[in-house]
Length: 486
Image (cartoon, rainbow, N blue to C red; front, top):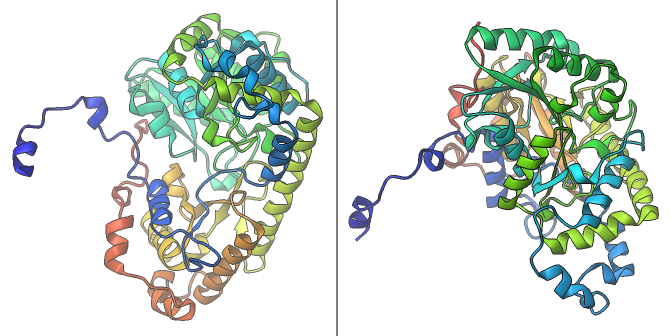
């Protein structure tokens, strides 16, 4: 019967079956390792600790307290049930008016009230994933390309490319200057793309950066706005981590930068936002497209019918975001807790000689340099080390090659998705591993696996590792993507 069913299968679409989803990346394989063997302090203390998920869980106590004090915010409580019918019936895909107003005010507050946002330009989408894909559908045709500074978020390969057919042309940023983005680097990538007959439709920035945890300064933003104006291409700024800036310099939005430019075609400027990172609500799937282009707003709103935010979620968040006293306190406390957690991790690593990108001041992660532990400065060596960390040390950190970085040995480490006790376990595992494996010039870390296993009493099956973690990216660490030919 199985063979008969297989022979009767019909062809599926190219979109459904192509390999552009990016799921073969170690970024996703690390998640699979965690799902199979989740850490629990008592039930599974030798399990994998999830440090590959950029989730903000540090302030849920504040959210839960607010919910208990405001039961009428939900239509599923006796206090809020009188609104049930009004919220449950059909809602226009423009979204609840009061929700769009509340989101606009929150975006302004996060940006220090130095800019204003028009609620009528806010378009909802199913999370930042849906927002990024929708803006690609609006701005580009299959085969067109966007410049994206690397290292960049691995799932951009899915979000920007998979169903849209859009290409990504990396803008190379190097460790030699702290991975700083410059207009000169953007110019080089743009020129190479043109020489390769690639039609560049725009530039995408993540500010604050994922995975670097850094922010762009005003001069850099203004220079990049000037660049897209000169080339008459679009600028999409992904600002979903804007409220996670926990130390100086402060966050500067592209909305603030364009206010200071006398000549700027605002039709080219678009912002992606979300409540997944700043508030810690990824499960609510609240993504926002804010465009200064009237046609883009209209087109994106039509497309948003495929990924709306539920009216129940809108209703709840309207009440939450409209409580200005709560929002002010939440943003302040979140900043303090993120700063403290970042310091605990990075200072703990410094004690065993592991450095991180010094200028990190934002995000839910830091950029860790394990280059001294590589047996050679290659991406193959990086992935070997990563497999040991995932399977022996039992920490799911994400290797830099999955972010399409150019310098082997860097890893993204997420720090805001766990409690304090798990932090200590994770730090102790890293410290023990580093101290047992030494620095560059010593025996390669993968060759000391057996000693590491004995000392931590962890089970490790090489065959299981190969089956579960093996990635095609070993052959091509930078795929899937398009790199303009020189």
